[in-house]
Length: 291
Image 1 (tube, rainbow, N blue to C red):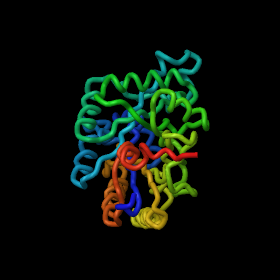
Image 2: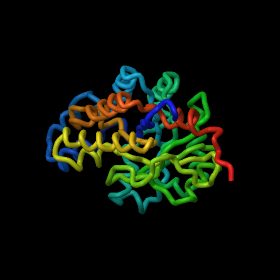
Image 3: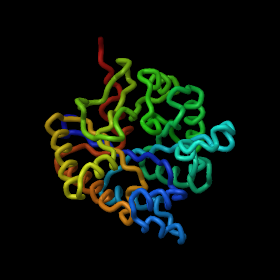
Image 4: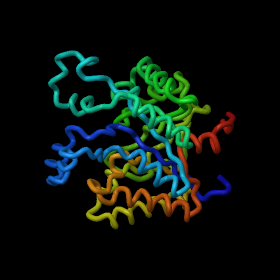
């Protein structure tokens, strides 16, 4: 990375592009009845694909988009699991990755230069054949092979999950990290769990832990800026995750603002900014360390 101060990899996990039961959930949990507004309209507040593409296009960057192919609760789970509240949270309200509208979005992203990757379903982290199936379904949609992704809920069993990823032909994983905290935690570069060309991108910042840790958007931004400065000091590879739904400023004020500011500031600081695949192919591929 001789020409850059550090790297900022941009990623998006596509969990729920349609708002269903979340109308009531967020209205109660956030004590904000405004979440119910879109329930009575034709608005789709979580459908942020066009807005995200326009934003990143304007900033001159591209990102990684990880698409989920989750099991269907009623068709693929046994009856005794149907009424478990956790399973409704995990499996209900999901999208069909082969739905015509989703397929069109995936192809639009790919043809526009964005990376399409796999968002391994909740139970797939220890299920080789399920991961193989999910990758095959996604590759039937796109024109180029899938080379990486992230496990849903950051589920990992190290190193077995990574071994499965490598076995099905992935070149990287971006699941190592926390959904409760943010920061580098000592990892300033990609990791090589098998000392070969398969690498791990540690997750530096997920949007919700960052915003929820502070009492204002400006405080959250200052914390984000501190992480950027740490990245520059250490010539780090910094990976951030912004779920598309949080780009909706009407329901999640500040989330989109910080995402945009982080990209602008990173570029000003001399960072390479782009998708994980772009970083891998530019700086990692063909650089396997020799014993």
